[in-house]
Image (cartoon, rainbow, N blue to C red; front, side, top):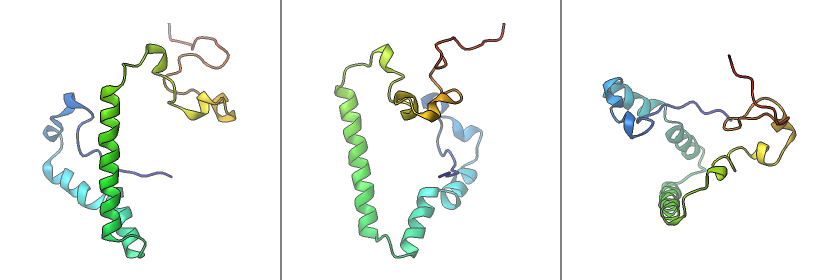
Length: 120
């Protein structure tokens, strides 16, 4: 599934001034006309598959899940350096056939164990 969307906010706190390079009108236009979550909700409601009460419950549940994840993260130990690349790509972690093709981010060695070629 491919969903084309628009980044309403900056990537991170250092990009908090994103309104300097995009107008509020541009951002509002995309929120109103190009938000895939809003459009998906509209489609489900038009087909009678989603009622406002269920949609509200889904949003509340998602917010609770996100807050619980923040709490879990805050109470957890810092990750070890060697754990930072685990559980990023299921195919790599489980050595599937697709993991044998191409390169995956965060993986500095190919599956042969040879270091990647770097320009000299």
